[in-house]
Length: 198
Figure 1 (cartoon, rainbow, N blue to C red):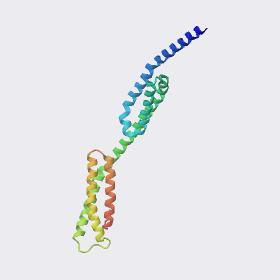
Figure 2 (figure 1 turned 180 degrees about the vertical axis):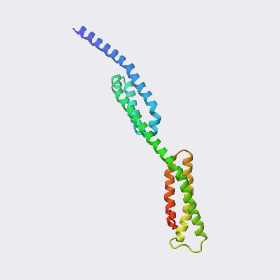
Figure 3 (figure 1 turned 90 degrees about the vertical axis):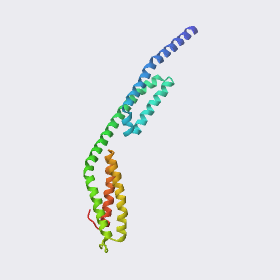
């Protein structure tokens, strides 16, 4: 009886070892498949949804850790969840990329009119400052301080506009538009301080 039990135990151990060995290949393939799928979307995910990418990386690292410990069953059980997470990651990154492309296209369209309007505003302020600087009497709605502020503000405006133009030249129309809006706002304030209508 004891002999039979030992033999049975040995047979079960052998089956368990064979079972584990049978799961090692598929577990290895599951990890390789997940890494390949993730590699295909990694760059876009890194740019648009880095937090989500980090979570998927952690899931794969956990599966690799389980594999290293011989928990092939655990790896196979985690596989479908990892692939679903990669699929969600791909969808989220694609959606964000599409939004970014739409915003870029909109900014690019808006830039063409802004790149004409803003220099005109800056030129108008420059000629007003030049005229008031030569004048012996300032208009009632303009003070010496506001004129001095406009002079220094004008230099700042030109520098800001140069930054906006550089951003547009490098293809960053979204950034260029944000900078251009700041220039327009500041220009409007200076025009108001000089008694000009924007």
